[in-house]
Image 1 (cartoon, rainbow, N blue to C red):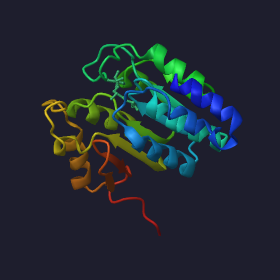
Image 2: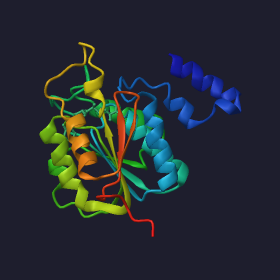
Image 3: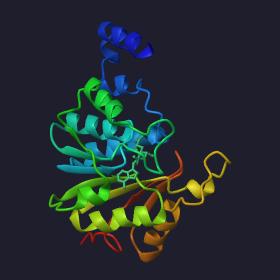
Image 4: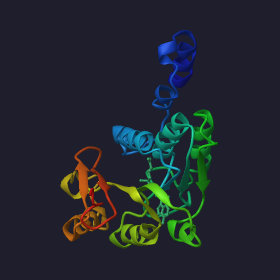
Length: 220
Ligand SMILES: C[S@@+](CC[C@H](N)C(=O)[O-])C[C@H]1O[C@@H](n2cnc3c(N)ncnc32)[C@H](O)[C@@H]1O
């Protein structure tokens, strides 16, 4: 309803016509919040040829990256998610396949985002493309997030960027979100302690950018 009103208004007022504005009206039911725009900004800046995301659900992060690629005029996001029962589905989104497809279509992003309906483990089999930007937001257990890092680390380009979601989860215990099997904060802290450069944004349960080179890429 709101989306319809907004798109009618957008027809009349040029300033409201941006796709980015339109996508903000979608019902993603995502914990990523405005940090989706961090992914958008990274993808606009990096000009990635190949992006990967692990864990797409209803498509909030996929739309953010897809919008950036569309504005860039190049690149592709491989959005990996089985869209079936896992222990890490958002509430009411056991099968989010039809929903993400509808969102990408409505946003005009099907050319920029390829849905890979697989687990990350299956999608990594035979993977050969160099990855410039990867967003890890799938299996949030320690073993799951570590497996995703291990599987895709060898495929990152020299200035590739890895983004993890929910890295400050342990600092935001509120009863509703508490879960003992959450392993992302512990794993990303281990990366930081081992010497990988990590920048963490204290919003939306924590979003961390990791440069996947021990000590960082040398500047000279
Ligand atoms: C928190 S949601 C992702 C939210 C999404 N990035 C967004 O922006 O709204 C986690 C998703 O990870 C998916 N998932 C769980 N285990 C996975 C795995 N091994 N490989 C790929 N996706 C997985 C679930 O199906 C679920 O849709």
